[in-house]
Length: 53
Length: 341
Image: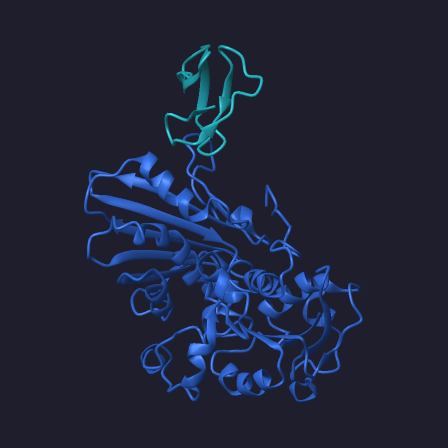
């Protein structure tokens, strides 16, 4: 388990894998797994609005 | 448990009926209305057609019940409550008549002396999030006003956190038309109401008294009518004594409401519905609370949204009954709302 870097909510690893992106259960911030031992998350990079154009 | 509803032809009475007819532990034995006596409840509340055989009876035909809900106008409950309490049943009053602990506040905010100030100390303010333990043994429950409920739930975590400076908290509240009840008036005609954004109580709204009573800080309340049937959005502007960050605010609100069945903390970083919004709560008993940090102004914006007829009245009254009777607190209140609506 770790904490959301934005709101301090408890975040469980469960079966998440390195690089997986998931929303924080409280504040909805998209988090990216950047470590599994220990479990660590960071805000996922947001897509810029012109990506793909 | 057998229940009676006094004043069941109004909007709040209709919501009480809708909830209690499907409550697993309650049987509605009577619904009173002098103006609708002898008529099916479906005549006043068409959503309840064929859901029950109940007909309205006159107030004079009211029999003792295990619990009596009073959905009567302000001022009428004052006269009815004393005799109802003598029957030994639980009384749940949805008017303002027993919300304030201080009898001197009634002439100031309701323009009348309270005829039974001795009963004010017996009434428990019906907000389970603040008074759950007192509600478990209450004989008289005073259900809060809708704008008051939203304002209190938004502000209470801040007022108990010792973050606020001594200045009044400014609360700007918007409300839908059903909050003013079913009685016709010039302000409620389609011509006046359609497209409305009206400051109907820019200062001096009577809910100020109960908000200050429950939050414990001075409040400056302004209320606006907007074009919606249901819904209240309270926006509190609270000035703080020191810098705070989002994490601290999250901890503060989690500590207050982390285990509450009908309070959802909403402060999301992305998406359409980032902060509380009453529209998606219509018909549900949920109150959404949220916040925004404004370090530039030394301000925390505290938000709360609810359905004025549900968490702002009938739903909260049923939640109070559930607490008082020892039923699961969510009994009869499981509806999650609609989206889109």
